[in-house]
Image (tube, rainbow over all chains, first blue to last red; front, side, top):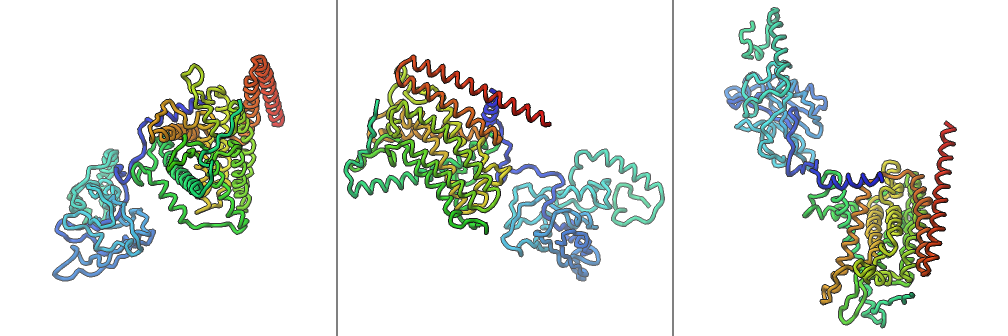
Length: 229
Length: 395
């Protein structure tokens, strides 16, 4: 009788391992390029990285970022440079976590963490202001009362930013330009990228052989081929 | 052998205490059934989850036991919607036509022996009408109206399709159901559920095996009843009436809030009651191997036996649901009319012949029935082959 085999299968299945992750109690490791909520990073000396250029707001497809820049107060500058982000707001009811703001940011001021467990009971709470987004003095993101964190959840930031910034070249992955991120130093390269990095390095050397225009200062700082020009 | 209908000793003399007793019994029965429904929903979800490599509800209360209660509260607080094209009063009435018969069928189930409280002895059974098991058929007949009217009164196409399917399915399987009940009634000589249970409480063949009808009737009516009752309950693999993938939710598509809760309640009540009916008819109801005589255990142990058997059948229903895919509509009708009804008719014939007590009759009936069955099967096969040929020829 053919249909009895089915009963055997369902019976045996009862004693097999379960596929369920008991989510709030146990959490699965997040994907390397997971996009969570944003943080506004600072330099090791406490200066904010944001220069108030509004590129993130301009590139945002969901129009969820609002930035106002302002000249640094003389004597007590907030960021190294001329201007700083005076107002910085992200509306998480609109944000689609596409990470375009992270790509656009010239100073790696805005990055995405892997934290996603936050919820609100009113619309005003959904708008994160600079007070909530800026990392603390230890370089770690602030934990807000409505965010569910476990120890270690804050240790990783968006791998996408790591792989592309600056100038969109993965060659610069793990090259220390400024400080390490969020106070946690530099991450290991992602798996499967070593070969690409080698190829890009070769491409880059070929490019370097051809003289071209002046490079951006920040890229020049890259210790890869220090005396590029 | 003719049994007299055993009347409930409580009703020997009727005064206000008797009335009070009956009211309390009804309330307790209602509470027990509602509690059992909550437990059954939880049990089904957990059990079917195990068969699908997952855990099922586990967050609300210990082991997720509070999940059904939480769902019940949630569903009742939802907005009650009614389509503009719906027939107002019938649309309201239909859910109750589903729930009330389910509870009324529960009333005839003997849950245990008898209990004595305040010098009054009463059966652990809400009612023991002389029509007994016919009551169950009557009630399932009324419950069909609940399904039909719900589909019709919704004024929407999927509920209507669902209820048309439901009425055809329920009516055709009721025949097989009735015939297997008839064989039970034949051996018992009474339709009262109490008598059916009492007749099974004795030791049977060899003094070892219980005298349960499942053995007495040699499994066939039991299997027929089990299949037909699955169809009667609209449970998979016979859930064509609410086939989610085809008909959204079948006859209860347009129901929300309290109406939906009623249908859901009725569905699980029917499942429990049907398990109870099978237990009563074929597995000796509250009969069990060990029957203590001490005061409290005397009435508690039979209830435990009964509960174990009911849970067993609920588990079988769930197991069937987890395993078998839904039947096609023509397969459903084939199974009902061409297999279950002839088989149970044939078996009824054999049982009747044995009952008359002459082995010649039994053999004669068996041979005649067998020949008839073979001829019928052959006729069906030929008909099916011809239909197949015609279909092939058309292509």
